[in-house]
Length: 315
Figure 1 (tube, rainbow, N blue to C red):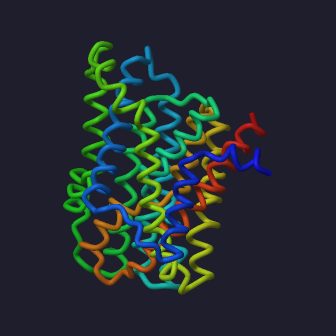
Figure 2 (figure 1 turned 180 degrees about the vertical axis):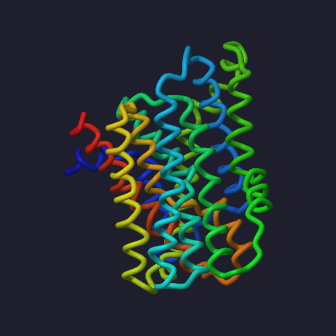
C-alpha cells in the first residue's frame, strides 16, 4: 500500500493537500499576488518550452489531424452542450456551460503534459499552439448561440477580440513565439527557470487550486444530478471519444492523450471572464464552480490516468 501511494505524482498530492486544508478550515492561503504570478509563470514557461521544441523539430508531421480533431472538438462540444441543457437550465446557463466546457484548461494541459513526461510518453511541441487555438472558438460559438436563441444583439466578434487579448492567450502564444526565436545559447540561459523549476512551481499552484476548488464545491453540488453529469460524466466521455478518434486518425499516443485531456477539461479563466461580461444572467455557481471544483480534480485524479491506460491498451 505504501509503495502504491509513493508512486502518486507530487502535483496531485499538493492539490489534495490544498483541498484538505480548506476542508478543515485552515488559515492556509496563497496571497492573490503570488497566485497570479504562479499562473503567469506556468503559462509563459509552457509557451517558451513549446516554442523551443517547435524550433528543434525538423518538420510538423502529424499536425494536420491534430488540428482537425482539435477544431472539431471545440465546436462540437459547445454545440451539443447548449442544445442538451438549454431547456433544462435555460439559455443563459446552457451557453455558459457550453463556453466553459467547449473551451479548454491550460492548467489541465500542463498537468497532463507533466504526467506524460513522468511516464516517458513523448509529445510534440506544437501541441501548445493547438491548445491556444482551442481556447477561443467555443466561447465565440456559445455566445453566438445564446444571442440567436434569445434574439438579443450580441457581438461575438468583439468578445473574440477580448479573448484573443486575454492573459492566457497572450502568454501562451507570446511565449511560443519567444521560444521559437531562442537559439541554443539563449535557451540554455533560461532553461533552469522555465524547465528545471517548472514542476516545483506547478506544485505550489496546484496547492492554491486545491484550496479554491474546495471552496467552490458547496456551490457545485447544489444540483447534484447536473453537477455529476456536467462535471464528471460528459467531460470523461468527451475525452474518451477524442482519444479514440485521434487514434483512428493516426495521431501519436502522447498527442492523442493531450487532445483527450483538453477535450475533457473545462475553462475557468478565459471562458468565465467572457461570460461574466456577455451573459450576466448566467449563474457563477455553475460555470465557475463545476469546471474548477469537480472537473479539474476528477481529471487530475482519474481522467488523465485513465486516458493513458486506454492509450496503452489500444496501441
